[in-house]
Length: 113
Image (tube, rainbow, N blue to C red; front, side):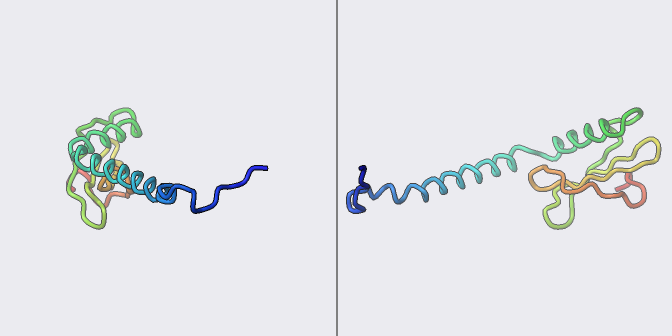
C-alpha cells in the first residue's frame, strides 16, 4: 500500500505553483493585447473591412466605396461606412483591438459620414 507523504515533507514551492501558472498566463494575455493594440492601425482596419465589404457585396463593389471615421462611444475605435453601387449601405463599428463590434444600418448617405 502506498502512503502519501506527510504535509511537512512536501516541498513548499508546490503550494505556489497554481499562483505562478495563473500569473504567467495573465502576463502572456496582457502582452498579446498590448501587441495587438500597438501593431494594428486604422489603415489596416479600413483595408480589412473594405475587403470584407467587397467579398460580401460581390459584383460592382470596390474598395474605394468605403470611408472611415473615428468612433464615438464606449470601445468603438473606428466606424467604416460603405456605400454600394446599388444604393445599399453597410456600416461597421470596429472595437479597440480591431474586432467587429456590430454591423449597424447606416442612417442617410453612408458616403458622407
